[in-house]
Each structure stands twice: as structure tokens, then as C-alpha cells.
Length: 418
Length: 101
Image 1 (cartoon, each protein chain N blue to C red):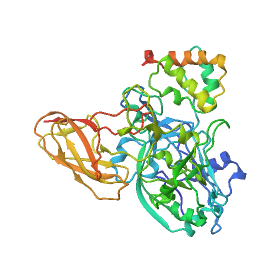
Image 2: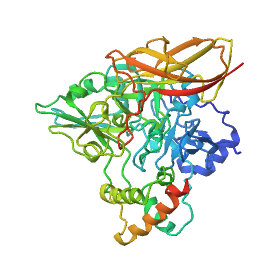
Image 3: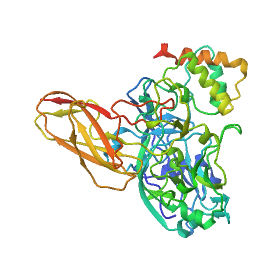
């Protein structure tokens, strides 16, 4: 095999091999690459800053210790400190989200196939090798953010996955263009949408399978990828090995993991996870008055504008009279960030931050701001980004019943000490 | 703590043959609070998902928990017998309602 998924771990010892052989059994020894977590795997605890926010830190296969929301299926958040490590989120820190408990834990690349069918001239059945070698590989740096990222901060609270801000990550994705694969199959006249299905499956037949759909125009746009690479390596199993859909600028619900079935449709797909799940109020800002219900809804789509301070956590100490550099990130749904402003006084006055390298419209954009303060006390730091379309962030959080698309101007209190 | 087991088998070194990739997930530990009716939660909720789906929710009122249980039945086909719904809702509201936080 040409490469192993990376581990920042101590080397395998001979004792490990012998112990593992006994555990896995001789018949499964041959042709296996196995990654097992220690029993339980709990390595600590974090407190997300909202009621009932206690979470264990757990080490999952191919992952460093992450914030666990649920075990079955696993849902893991990235700890806040990771976002200041670099503009790309390392594979072993990237968040994990599933809907259905039957997730694939073993993939045989010899037998894995991607099927393209439906309203096409010629159905395709592709191995990963055929996908890698038969279609031009392209790369794009893009943010994957959960629709419900930051839902735990919703006021009033709403039911659902009670996430902090860690269900987002930025990666360099590599794969074939969906457009190229669809054109190889040949789209029939009258095709309207394309549906995507992964290997994960429902616990009972009556539970709707997790299938998402894109409009045909979008599927053929050239930006949607069938990705087999992430930050220069294979996808971690828990992020969709060996293949996932990458939909730059769109919320993560569309980024189907362990993608194995693409179906071109001559009608709008009305499966549960499109027609009932993942719908937002059909209003500006996708918001409604807290506690009310929307009159009409549309499927969630592009990311809105967000920004974060990543260099300093809530309550961090800053020394007066010394230059301090604040660092952070900003991102949107693909127009690109044009400006980030930072307030050190709770929003009374704003300074323009310096923007870092542009890794493309779909990537995190880093920003920095240097300042010197001579006044001890609490500095209420606020960060606000604007994109090239002039879209920005609200000073007060917008609300919807599902807790989607939170993008309020973030506030972090720092302690300025003499 | 015991070192994690990471085992790599390089037995099949035939060029071009890829070994299956496999992971093992940590053991799941149900974490429902003791209380009247906890057996309903253990029997019904864990069919489809781990207990954290309940235990990490914000404190929900009895009406909120009833709506959740009804959603599980209507949207996700949870096979909760009609005559057990009330007992399950009572357990959830008393263990995971506002009074507890």
C-alpha cells in the first residue's frame, strides 16, 4: 500500500502487534489495516459555555481527542484551540457528524464502487482507481460547516445537536469534478436534480436514509467535487473514506460521506432530508421571531458570513503597554471576504484588521490586528466580517426554530492587566 | 492508561492490492439518569441512537419532550407503543426538564 493514514502517536510495538493479532483473530490478520481506540477512550472533559455544556474529550480512530456530542452515531466537535494552529484544519482534528447509526467501519477498495445512474445515457460503475485515474483531479480549499454549528448558543434554546462552534473545518479537498463524471455518463434531456447517497444506513427500514440532492445546474457547475483526498491524504474513515461529496460554499448537510450512489432525476427529490429536514424560513436572514414557526421554508443552501477570534480564548490575559496581536478567521458562502473589523470596546469603535493570504473564496481567510492598550480592565472584543457582496453579520443573533445558520458578531472578553 | 491499539499489517505486499481499511469505535456507555420510567428510555430510545441525544439537550418542558417523542414516532418510525408514551415523557421531563438545571 502506498500510504498509511497519519498518526501523531507513539510507534507500534511488537507487543501491540501480538496483542492485536489475538484480539482480531488469525482469519482477519491478512489484508487488514486496522485502527482501534483504547477502551472508552475518554481523556478529559470540556465545558461548552452554555447550560448542559459538559462534554467528554474522546480519542476516536484516526483522530486526536475531540469534543464528543454523541457516541452512536459518533458526533465530534473540534476544540477551539485547533483553529489557531493554521488555516487548514488537520484531518485528525476535523469534526465528525452522522445522522444514522449504521456507519461503515470497514472499506475494501478492491470492491468499493461509485454508481452513476438514473436519467443518464450510460450508467457508470467506477472503482476508486478509475475515478482517480480516469478523470482530471482538481483541488479546492473549502470550509465544511454544519448547518447547526453553534446551535447550543441559540437564545431561546432549541432542541437538536447542542454544538459549540466546533462543527466547522477548512481543508484542501482533492477529487474529480462531479461535472466531468456526469458528462461521461451523459445527462438525459429533462433531468432536473441529482441525488447523492452514502454507505451509512438507517437502523430500521422506516427511518429515512440520508440522501441529499442538488439542482442539476449546481451539480454541473464544476465546483462540486467527488473528493478522495483531504489535506494531502486519504479521507479519515469518520470523514467519509474513501469518497465524499464536496459542495464548496454550501452547508455540510450536502457533503455526503462514503458516497457510492449518484442518481440523476427528472423530478425534484422529495426524500425526508430534503423535503422535511434541513429547511430554513423563507425570509431575509432565514430568521423569524423567537418561539414562532415559519410560514414557508426552503432547503438550506449557502453559508452566511462568519468570523472568529482564534488567538485568544474568553478571559485570556493581555498585558497593558505591550503590543498584542489578535488573530482569527473569517469565511462566507463563496463571494469571498472583503473586510474584517474588530472592536476592542464592545462595539463603540472599530478598527480594520489586516487580511491574510487568500486561499480562495471558499477557504477560511485569516486576519490579524495589532494593538497596544494602556487601560487595565475587561476589553470586550467583537469581530465582524463583510463579504464582496456587502453581506455581513448581525450584532444581535438571528433565530430560527432549528438553530441553523448562526452568524452573530462574536464577542470575547479579554483581561487587560497592568 | 493503556496505550491505544494501533495495528498495521503489512502482510499483503503485492503491488496494486489495497488492504481493507477498518476502524473500531470506542464502547458506548448509556448514560440515562435513574428515575421512574428509565426503563422506557433504555428500551425505546437506544434502538436507534445513544443516550447523549437526550442527555445533551437543553432543559425541555414536558410539552417539549412530548413533541420530541411524537417526532421520533411520526418522522423516524420509533416503535414506541402508544400506552408507553406518557410514562416515557414523564421520565424525560422529570430527569431532563428545567428543574434539573
